[in-house]
Image (tube, rainbow over the protein chains, first blue to last red):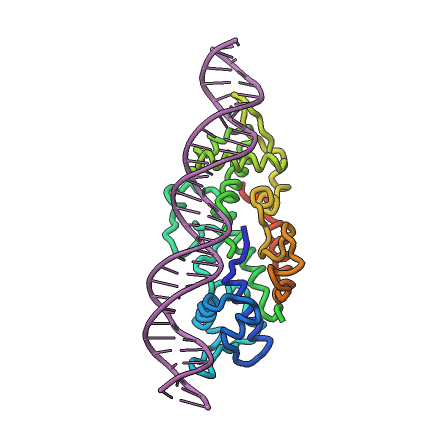
Length: 133
Length: 133
DNA sequence: TAGAAATCGGACTAAAAAAGTCCTACTTGG
DNA sequence: CCAAGTAGGACTTTTTTAGTCCGATTTCTA
């Protein structure tokens, strides 16, 4: 049901690393420290950068740096930055036309699913990177 | 991150159906009513039966029947009955030897993940089939 | 008592998603 | 200029999930 993806797992490790060390760190450094495949991590860092929670510097003395206070970066935000779909169910997703569940409008569990989604968002949204330090 | 599987989705629909109607219903009846592939639903019903939340009757007038009050069947229980792994992360799973995260014991996010797991279990555990009626 | 309508359950295939790899381009400090 | 970085597209592999198929067993009923 709710296993988090490696993308999120690695992303959290990277953010933890950055938050802990305070300084600029390279993707290579982080991948070495955590046994994360370098290429994969590189992509993840780009996504986190795009979100704005970290900053990046190209070139020889480049790397990544935290841009926000750890306690202001919620898990919801991290997940949102790293994953396409963040809803519990396809029919709740805002990305598709879901005026009906797939073919028919006979979906009988939409409302409770929506409720579950809210409950989940609330609880996950309360945790931040500060909890990882 | 946390999309629920079709197994759980279909399982919830089936439980809703049984709880709503009160009587014995066949897998065919439920699959027709909800556009669920019959063979798949049949397996799901067997899993739910094994858990004990529903009962089954073989033979010509057979089918399935709810065995518990809807408000006593939590989502956690349904998920547990229908899925192998129910943990947010592999290293938390009780099914594997995880005295260390895979190869090395350098997993730096285990504790917060454990906390997240607890938070999640708590919130999901509060919802029951009664919410689906 | 035969047969239809069910559940039971294993084995398999197909499809989708996730994880990981490869390669090239661009940037920048020394 | 070149080494050490990020940026990012395209691709392959692996894993997981979804779905299918088939035969066995049970049991009501005509």
